Structures are given as C-alpha cells and as structure tokens.
Length: 92
Length: 307
Image (tube, rainbow over all chains, first blue to last red; front, top):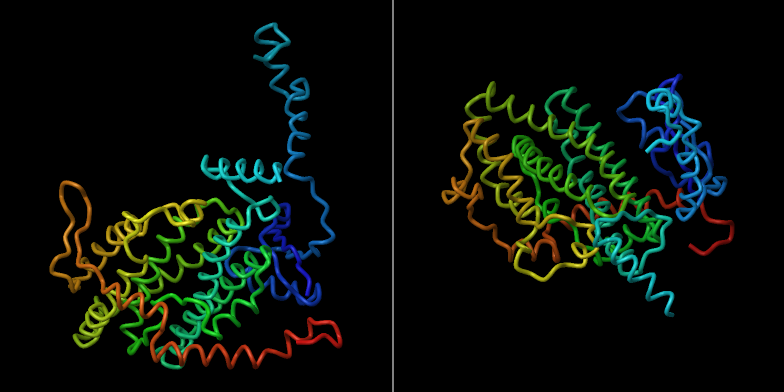
C-alpha cells in the first residue's frame, strides 16, 4: 500500500489543486478511488494522483526564503506608480 | 532533553495563541493522541452509520428516494475514507480502527445504536441529526489541526445536501402528506428528540478543561453547540406545526438561552459504552463486510507476509 496525493483540475484553463490523499495498491487504483472520494460534487476536468514519496517540498522553517520576493519592491508595478506620484523611490 | 522541553513549551504556546498544526509539523504525543481520538471516533461513526442507512435502501418508497439515499451513503463512505486518511498520516490505520471496534474497544456514537423503525422516523431523525452534525463540524473545523479542518470542510459540503434532503422529506410529509404520515413524523420526533438532544454529549461547562479543549481540537463547549442546535431546529420543527416533546422547552427572552429538560445521561453513557441489542446487529454487518473484503487488503501485503 502506498499513499497518493490527489489533485483536481476543475477546468481546463485552471491549474490543478491539491484536495487530499488516497491509500492504494497501484497508481491506477488510486485514480479510481480518488474519483469516488473527491469528485462527487464539483466540476472536474482532470484528476491527478502522485505518489507522496515523489514529492519534494520546502520545509515550514524555509517559508522565510520566499519573503525575499516581497521585499524586492522595485519588481512590482506599484513601485513605479508610487515613484511617479511622490517623486520618491522609497515605498513607506 | 532540554531541547525537547523547549519544543513542547513552544508548541503549547503556539496552540494557546490559536496557532495551527499540519501533519508534517512536530507535535507532542499527547496532541497526536487527542487528534486521533477525535478523528477516529468520527471516522468510525461515518462507516457504522452507512450500515444503519443502508437498511433503508430496499424500503425507500420511490426510485428517486433510493437514488438520493444511495448517494448519501456513498458520501458517508467517502467521509470515512477521508477521516481515516487523516488518522493514517498520524500512524493509526483504518484496519486498526475497525478491528478495535469489532473487539469492543471503541466507543460508537450513541445515535447509531438505536434501531430506526419507520421511514418517516428516519426522515425526521435525519433532519435533526444532520443539523446537529453540521453545527458540530462547523465548530470542529475551527480547531488547531489543519488536516482535520480540511477534511471537515469537504465533508460539510456534502452534509449540506443530506440536510436539505431530510428537510425536503419532512416538508413533503408534513405539508402534502396524509394525516397518518404527519402523525408518523410527530411520532418519530417524540421518539428521537432526546436522542438528538444528547448528540453533543453531557454538559462540560463546569468540568475541568478536557484534553481536546486544551489542545484546541474542540473549540466550543457541548452546551454552546446544543444551544446553537436548538436555535436552528426548534423554529424549523414548530414552523412545520410539529410539537417538541418537552413542556419545559423555552427560550429565555432576556438571555436568549434555551431552557430544556435534560436527556437521560445515564442511558446515554450506557448506550455509548455498552451498546444496545441493535448495536450487535450493526457490528455483525460491519464484521461480515470486513471479512468479505479481507482478500483485497491481503493484496497489499508483500508475498509471504503474515496477516
């Protein structure tokens, strides 16, 4: 038995979203079980299962790594609007 | 050792401040045990409940009502599945939950230990019970353990369909049914009122904080949830012209608090722990199914493994 993470892509033009997990013998059976458990109501375009062991994720304590993206304000459109309106290149 | 104590203190503080915990986070064993106790209790109730409901499939009066009931039962199996996955990620397998139940080591929701004797009783009972379940799930979904919250959010979506199905059944019999059907709904209400009133368990207002409240798996007191249920169910039932079998029941106009006759808590405790003759029938059904599907579970074991 292996654990498979289940993802649902609701519409073709949307990204898939994680919805839960299934314990199964094979990936094929996991897909079948996931259909029964996770697609009972909402629209679904595509259902995906991934063995949990195949997923590599950052740890909780690494969440700070992504704060850098936010601190670089010069990469955001507001930066230039702010600069034009205030004449200052520092955003509060 | 020192590091362990610090980690424990930090975790305790995190919970006390309303922090959330995910499956991959470090957690003390006490916390894990409390999550498992709460989630496995509900997981078992979902599965056992299907046996109770499935009895009504042959007796549901129309093809449409059979289809709707079958959908409800499939939902419940799905709920059991999702909740058991939450348990399995914390080290408790679905097989263990069922085996412990069959061996008599697990408490079962008192509600599912009474035999439903009539389709109309089933309808009114489903209305009261699903209303109670929704209120309880809404509360539990604000707890500290994220995988349980996510599971409940999905479950509530489907539970809402169960609620409206029951509401539609009761409305049909009360508003368009025969006198006899109305009578049967009232009879079901008389029989099942106190069993539903006891759904949230005995008052815990004056008791010391339970581990599940302490770790914020449970966030509302049983009494508070019961009040919310009364707020919702009493106007609904009286609006149908039904009579609630409690002459003491009234809402205090100043405090807004419902005053009511307590259910027989001794009976509640006895039924929860010891069961009823009907519980044995239900357990036998689960046992039959569990053994019937043993070959499937064995497929998942390596060749030569001892069962």
